[in-house]
Length: 256
Image (cartoon, rainbow, N blue to C red; front, side, top):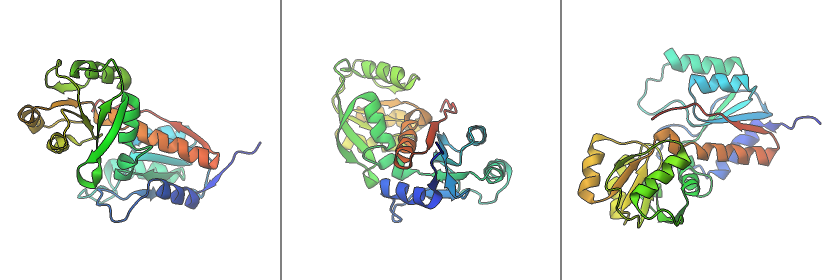
């Protein structure tokens, strides 16, 4: 049986529709096709960040397209194609690989977004949203063994494969949980004002410690990479199912 292929433009349009990408969204990078490759796509690779290691893994996997959460051309960065950026893009072009990147639209999506997938992974029942663009999520835990912050921390370590950094009391009850993946530690105050007594994100800043203590909210820094592994994989599976093409997720470890 011949391997099915999908036209690059159809893939681009399909993802834009699935993620409901709005040109009015104030994002840090362009969302969509960032580096153009071959027209016919038979195989896609997904990963969190378009590092050189992931590019080389996509080449080894004979991928025609690479889908990531963290791509290129970030706001306020040097636009020149030099150094590591040149090397990454040169390798993509040399192997005719399309690079797709989806940042905030992937965080926000109600079904396969990073926040939605993290909720599924940790057994959270979403009850509402908060923050700019409603990017933060609010809910309760459905897991009967999670009653305290210490028990939630243990669950996160088990499910995500890394121990979160906890600011707060292990014995504190888990009532309402707020979460936003990646580098959303700055939304802690908004989570507290929305009614959360526990907040999860990926990273932590020096000021986050003081804010958590002063708002009386437990904070768990679970890893930027660790909290954002699942949305892009789910997107890849959806694209593959739509077009009948191959897909694999490739993990490039990152301790942050």
